[in-house]
Length: 136
Image (tube, rainbow, N blue to C red; front, side, top):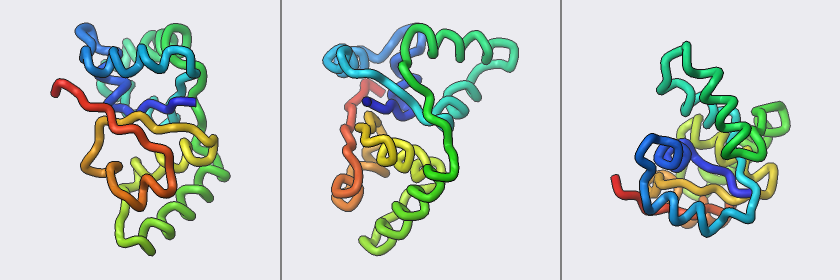
């Protein structure tokens, strides 16, 4: 499964989608797409409360195959990842750590434009990450 980070999801779902993100995702159209429930929170936070339910329904119906919850198994995976990354001399903030843990737990690939945080050798060794270049 291809898990979208919020930066990729937001650039795909906006009224004028980022053409680079659209091209990347079109190349992965045959693969199921998912997000972490943390990414759902980040994405929906940009909308007024009155629009959030409709935006969530649109995502579930038109874009995503799965929204993976953060449960105790994901928390265990996050704690393990944090230790492994610390031992390798790098770190992720808590939100990114839980997104990465969700992806790793489910054996997926993370599509992110966040090269500053995710394009590091120790992270690539622990997680399948694809850095998606974007317009802005």
